[in-house]
Length: 417
Image (cartoon, rainbow, N blue to C red; front, side, top):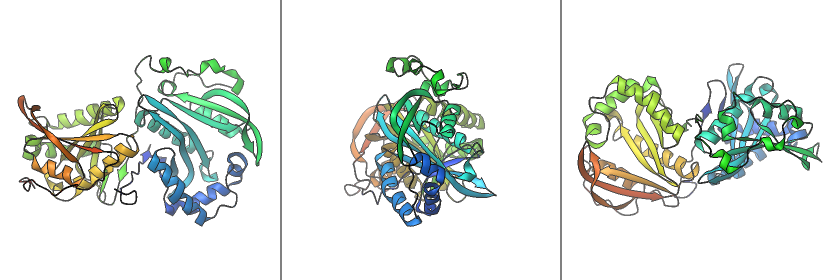
């Protein structure tokens, strides 16, 4: 599928006050104002002559390309100003380097006056760190600023970053070369940030205090709470499950088709739903092994179903899906899986996504076919159908595959649609 044809992921991170989302062309005026701001020109080498047209060009060009490649993820920082949602800054993960065991990135931030001195920047960075460490599973973040930029240095410290180095000529101020300061924060430091003292000055913490040794990072499992991103298109929204979804979740899981083709507990109750929403799903996100989203109607936010990525092996994941009877045949499942695939390939950098179905669930297999999955085969007795061995279909999709049917449909029409 071409880039222009592919649904791009739009993660939205929020703590209820501050939100991070992708920049759009509608943000061009605010983005240009951020660049023209005198403090950003002085300390961040922003373009003092930026106009709306140039801003729109950057948003649709290099910034969008950064999201497509996963190398640079730039968010708009949004807060309410006089009762209206306004872009008050930008925040980015730059130079993202992902590995199978972690990776690194640099944090960049620029604010407008309405966002300064309100706590907005710190809230935004805490959201970004949760996303970087909890979702992208990076192991270290860097913060680069110019010596003398006291506001940036203070913000870095408040957000748990510690000094790593002072580098001559690494910064710039008023268009001139200046000395630079590099701060860093590891996933382990982020997890224990409430217990760690904040350094008083750049010189107060020796460089040896910053654990850059990979062995130290892996000494014990981390308990980093990930941020569940919000992915949306015109039809559906993928978001975190809440207890407001519980009643519909129970109805979905008690539906005969769900009982027949999935592994939901029998006689599903509100107690099951509460445990799934408040315990199993957060545990899955915390370990990175099962990433579950609620699928909601984009207009009403009513629950349609759930989808998940079961990440049991490096570089690959399997899809889980369960929709209520009211959502079947509406195209919602297909829209949701397209968002999920974009997240898997372009945010998690997976190489393969697999689709498993209990034979003969033709409805599931046809949905996978519509999304471009290739039928790889049938394994006898490989599916645990409530204690009874049953046959399993396996289909796969690679990161570079076109997400359209590769051959005509050769199965029957699903009887459950």
